[in-house]
Image (cartoon, rainbow, N blue to C red; front, side, top):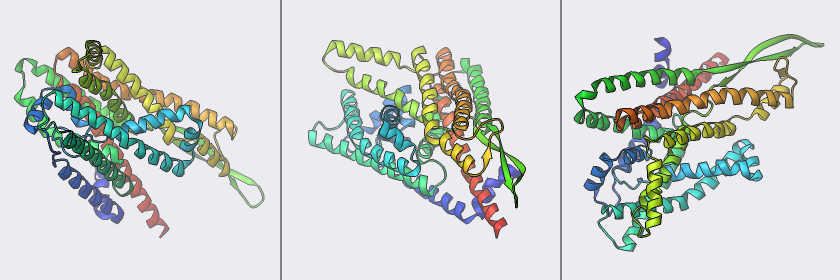
Length: 427
């Protein structure tokens, strides 16, 4: 019980953590206020009715941080930024200069973040145009003036830029990852609405289905926590240098998390899966029958209840887990640090052999962690397809994100708590 209450006590007692918590709360309050500032030219009541009747649009609203359902000035959410990040991660595998930047530590990450922000702007305009065309085909726009429609698109691009800035401030001065936090807040604020909608449409003949899903959700939360905390400990030995020679050998461990990437692969995968469905909705109303038919087929393939959707979603989660793990974990740097500190892995020669060994272990544990993430992501959708309760598929992805973000926040608090305890010991 003391271990559970330690993070809460740390938020009150430690000045730096208290400042980060207050900053996070203020920024989230600003975000939620701006999320309710509507963009002009949209029939909001008809838009809400359309979102409430579509599982795909409800999922899209979740990953916009809850801003799309209100069609606020942040209606595009972080999707353009996430798409830009995905593009640069993929380009890093094909362009040697980008790959070298990814391995240059903080400087490389800053340059890639700068390129990502620049690419986000044209993506904002493209997605804004697609969104306006979609709303026009549904008869949800209250104006047909090109200048007014252009002003809406510029407003949406500015809102996404503001949201990116908010996320970066949370990264630097808040608790946890900014992108994850914004999506987390969007999900949490929608929980009361989703619960009320589920209760109002409750089918008493499916009561056992809801009970089963509740039990599945609780089991998923437990499994996510266990896997999130799981580590593979690699033994490390260090030679202690004496007055004349190396003496005793001290032993320690290098902990490798089973899931190095956290919740980011899920966010990337869902953002990627939303693009084909969005494009198909835009193209389905064109005058060319062949293109409209092609768009309808894409929409049918990317329906959450289809086998193709779930298989492709699973593959994306696994792939993005590997991609993001390669970005955040650098075996070459760890091997160099071990060698410079006089440490080594028993039975493994320092240098390239250590790098190969770390890559081997990392690939194996990442496969297990990525497979688990993919399984938890698609199982609710599969079960939802059998039961016919579409809202539960969205709930499964939301539970995964919420639990993972809470774990990230707790780890941030615990790391600050350990640093504070260490500083007190030195004093």
